Each structure stands twice: as structure tokens, then as C-alpha cells.
Length: 400
Ligand code: ATP
Ligand code: MG
Image 1 (cartoon, protein in one colour):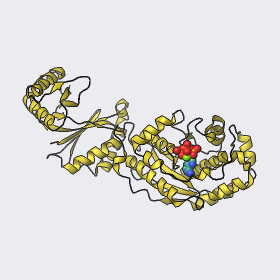
Image 2 (tube, protein in one colour; image 1 turned 45 degrees about the vertical axis):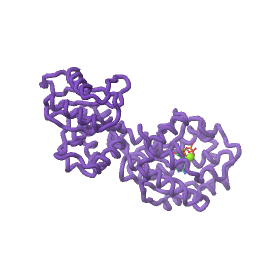
Image 3 (cartoon, helix red, strand yellow; image 1 turned 30 degrees about the horizontal axis):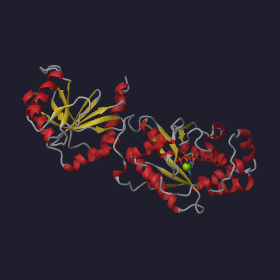
Image 4 (cartoon, protein in one colour; image 1 turned 90 degrees about the vertical axis):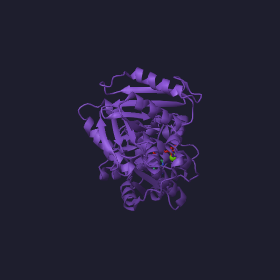
């Protein structure tokens, strides 16, 4: 019943001279997510991409479009559509045919006449098509405020398109257009959401996780792999590195002020992630911190932590409430994995009363008791790439 996918692009439309660069990236990503576009004729315009198939789309192809389009950054929304001639009678028939395929009787017709040579204006097209649908009976009524079905009609130079289905896009900018960052991925709720928010800005995100094997269970590493897999649905070909953190934790625990332990763990994580990032040509680090959420995230402790980082640290959740972060985690399909119980390396050897207002000077004084350079070198030599996947069931992403 559909032979076309109309894709409306998002922020790309605001770009000027370099818009082509973003459009090319989006085309590459569309191909990667949709397993190639060989079965489509591709028509690119400012603000939209139209994928036209000679034959009606098979159910499997349509399922793939419905699954993948919400995961492709740069897309505002897309519409599976049926093509017909630029003739108002054909359009009316196609609209009624489409209406018959969906449930819901309160409808609204939205028409857009991109080709101004078509004799009817957009409101007139909407009026005529609406009247035709009403006339067909079936207890249908027009509802502008809260329609169950929106019938979209788009008239372009090459034909008219009719659609009753809208697939929400992921928004943002196409993956790969904003450089590379390294995200510190724990097993919690926050860091996957932080990673996703940076991804949505067009960055390719590589993941680093610090594990405390043998003090923590292999299940917590498995959980992080599945989180990376869930995020990989949005960017593909993700890289995940696992870094052994137990020796550093043991050294910190043995020789430094207990109150500062977590801040010292965090400083070392940034050092290690920074080294890896530099090796990969990534320009910044990402964490899931939010001001004041836990003791290690007081403003003072974040500042002290930052001071040890060789690269800028981005914290996309810095001003977000936990409730909003949780809602986003559900939407992007990481929440169910994040809430599985796991042992966190940072909850090991943690004092009852951590410092809330550390200073860089105090942290450096404690680190002076450690042979940091060899600890860092040892951890990096144990760092290993892990396979990402398998991807969790798509049903975990909720509708947006
Ligand atoms: P999250 O849900 O991200 O775990 P959280 O509230 O538990 O958040 P913390 O445990 O204090 O936060 O960690 C703060 C940030 O430090 C995390 O968001 C993550 O970016 C990073 N981080 C913490 N532990 C690890 C780890 N084991 N491996 C990689 N990054 C980590
Ligand atoms: Mg955590």
C-alpha cells in the first residue's frame, strides 16, 4: 500500500553553504541503517528526501523503515506514502484508500503544495479531499484539534503523495558530522543518556568502561556491553573499550585519604579515557554527571575532577533532573538494561562520609602518594576492545 518514504530533515535545514556536507552524511547513514537504497529512486530537495520504489513496499521493508527511521539522527520525521498522479480525483481516491487501512474516524487533512503549478491551493486541496472522505460515510468526522488520523498530501513536481502514517525521527544532526568524542559509560541510567544526547548532535561516540574485575562480577561488564549495543542502534559500528580499574582502586584505597577516594577514582578515569581518546583522535570526553546528584557531583568535586582531565569534559546532563533523565532513558531504550542490578566499581571501597568540597590541591597532595604514571600505563596496557552487542529487542524503545 506504500511505495514511497518522504523524509523531512531537521536542523540541517538551517545550514547555509555547508548543507551539502550534512545531507551527504545523512544519505550515508540512511544507506547504512536501511541496508542500502538500491530499491529506491532518491530525490533530494532542501528539507526533504524522497525515496520512491517502483513497486509497493514489502511488509518486511516497511517494518525495517518503521524500526530504523526513529534512530537516524538528522531526521525530523518521515511518512510512508502512496504516490499518484497530480490529479485531484486521483488524490482523493488515494486518500480514501489510505483512510480505509487505518483505524480511527476523527481525521484531519494537511496538504502541502510544493509545486505551485498545481491549480489548487493547499487549503483547497485539503477541503476537497476532506469532503470526499466525509462523503464516503463510515462515521468519519473532521477534527482539527485532536485527530486520530492525519492525512498528509504533498504535491511535488514529480507527483502527489498521500500518507496517513508519521514516523517520528531522532532529530539532531547526522552521525559523523560533528567529530568524535569518548564517553565514560558506567552501568547506570545517566551515562547512556549523556552519550545519546551527544550522539544526537552529530558526534560519533566511542565508549570506555572501567571495570573492577575480579572484585565485581562479569555480569556488570556484560550489562555495559548491552548498553553499548542499545546505543549502537543510533550510530552503528560503535567502539567499546574495557579498562581494568582494580589496581588503581586498590592503590588509592591503600594510600590516600578515604574521604577523597571517589574524586580520585574519577580523576583517574578521566586521565585514562583522555589517553585513549587522544590515541583515537577524539577531541573531548563525555560523562553522565548532573550537578549535586550524588556526593561526587557537587560543584566543587566536579571542578576538582575536571582539573585532572587532559581533554575537555562534556556533561550533557549537567542541568537535568533525574526524572527527566529517566524518561529519556526509557525513550531511547536503555532504561530496562540500566536498572538491572550490577556492582559498580565506584561503590567498592567507598567511605561513609565522602568529601563534598574537595580542592585540586588536596587531590594532588593525595595523588602524590601514588605512582600514578605507572598505574595509568598498567591500566592502559590491560585495556581491551569488546564486541558490542547483541542488540536488545527493539521493543524496548518506547514511542515518542
Ligand atoms: P550513571 O547512571 O551514569 O552511572 P551515576 O549517577 O551513577 O550515573 P556516578 O556513578 O557518580 O553517576 O558516575 C558519574 C559518571 O562517571 C557516570 O555518568 C559516567 O560517565 C562516569 N563513570 C562512573 N563509573 C564509571 C565506570 N565504571 N566506567 C565508566 N564511566 C564511569
Ligand atoms: Mg554510575
